Amino acid sequence: MGMEIRLTLSLPRDRSTVPLTRRVLDAALGVFSVTRDCRDDIGLAVGEACANAVQHADLGADYQVTVTIHEDRCVIDVVDEGIGMDAATGADADAHAAIDAESGRGLRIIHALADMVEFRRHQPHGVALRIVKMLTRVTPATA
Image 1 (tube, rainbow, N blue to C red):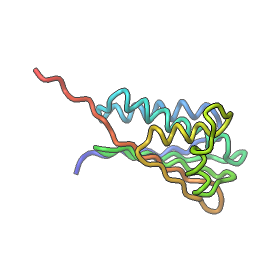
Image 2 (tube, rainbow, N blue to C red):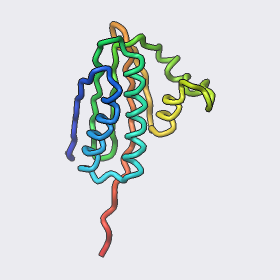
Image 3 (cartoon, rainbow, N blue to C red):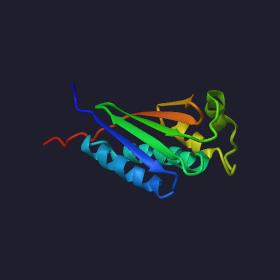
Image 4 (spheres, one colour):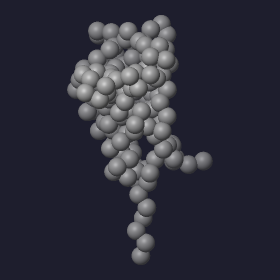
């Protein structure tokens, strides 16, 4: 079995946690020699997911980000205790958001960058968002 990294962050509902999460994830992906383009895609997707959690979580509530990096893929779970949305709303939100809309673009961006996106209701309320991205790794230069 290959190497696997699992990180769990419990974060306050604060905008400063969004770039922090991106930096931590980027450093972990660097251990796996993931290409810069792939790391940027994952960073943008997780940034949008965290921004949504910060915006929609209950006041004073923390949100959790769990990242599991496998040899071939990165799985990110963002869970908040917010007002929540049903799975159908989350799955369809990006399809109905106008390109120039003030909200809803984050979900469109996440869907565009990820290989799989899944919404689940989190009990007793809130939402769990799973993002899966297949990893592209830097190939060593041949001599």
